[in-house]
Image 1 (tube, helix red, strand yellow):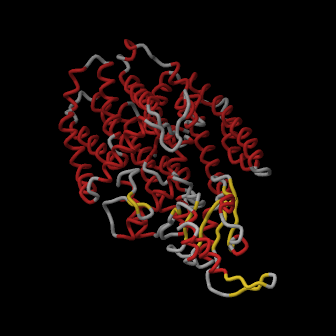
Image 2 (cartoon, rainbow, N blue to C red):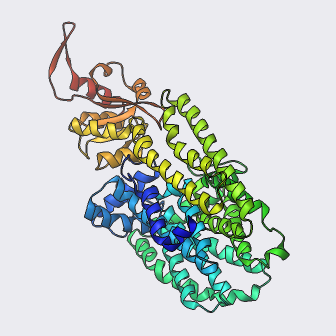
Image 3 (tube, one colour):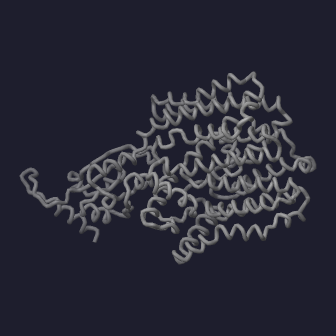
Length: 548
């Protein structure tokens, strides 16, 4: 089967990319918090005709540089603002990365090796997830994946192909536009560690680092200068200091992790190929003298190792931080298979079978505990289990394509059946729709003690975050609405509560609490209440005066 695919490898790989990454791409709403953060930023920039300064909810957005927004904005302009248009840049980036891995695997070895590496990559769980997410991580993965693979090829090809070297530096420049200085720092560390391990420090100059830095700066620096000038340096300070240095030295947004965090998430992200990766890492060469005779393996180990050590040392830990090392793992598995065909086949099929069965059982139990009756959606992984079971006695030539096909079938079930069902657990689209039905436009909705970017994405306009009850009273007196947790009602005067209009009440899956969409009828009119006249507007003004 691999031989048949090797006759038209690009066609088969693009077909798998289309299924795994693009099928039902807009079939479910955006996931908080990253997806709507990025989509709202691109939408606001497009609406303002602003192509230079990232903004979110009317304020500067310091989190990420410009590249993702530059890709989203034309798509929004041509096709409209939708979930699938927000996610399409990620699909394109990861699909390109799959072809990059195939190309360099073929260039360094043969078509079969490149095809195996690409098949493993295109059907791994974390790659499928990130390809369907509106985040800048796929862009960084593509840039670093191309650059480091090109550096390895440059080294193997007698360090004479300078066009390839320049192309690698250009891609790193785009990586700086995608996620910042990390796109320079980590590839530089990989190359430095590799050459030192090879005992070839003198070859550093052959990579023309000064010229490379100039190329990178020529690509990225114009935008950084522009955004710095337009914001009087405020954006550069917020991004470089807070979202780079503070992210490394301190824990941001509660992302702490635990010892061994990246071992677990990296191996888990390679489902269903985790067993094969463990074997390729653990059973291959590790001694320096042996690795110096296997420069490809040494380079790939340096690639994975530098990312692992760097982000383990960082205080903020997220599974996505190891994603740029996925191309290295794919190539390592493919190269290890070449000399360990039978051993690799056993680790691959038995590992995939055990993992797929464990996921079905584990996910089913978790779903049943969390949402009784919804365990059935764990059966989305049943096609993968069947494929791995059927491939147990097959040779590697057939087992890899069969398991990849089983994973693709499971993705179809997940995207077309499993994920859409969970929409009723995501309440912000419901709250946004209720606000629109009640006549509260993009200037008439705020939040109190609660905020999710998806609420802003689905409602539009601006979404002020009210700081205290005085701000709430002022806002409600203007005939506007507020989204707040039900528990926040305890802060309202009891005399006001009977007159609050609750337009929507929903239980938030992320917030883990009941959320309310409320307003206050401020029109002056008299109501009879137990024989007494009560002016609602007067009551609200009395309440408001308590905060002056």
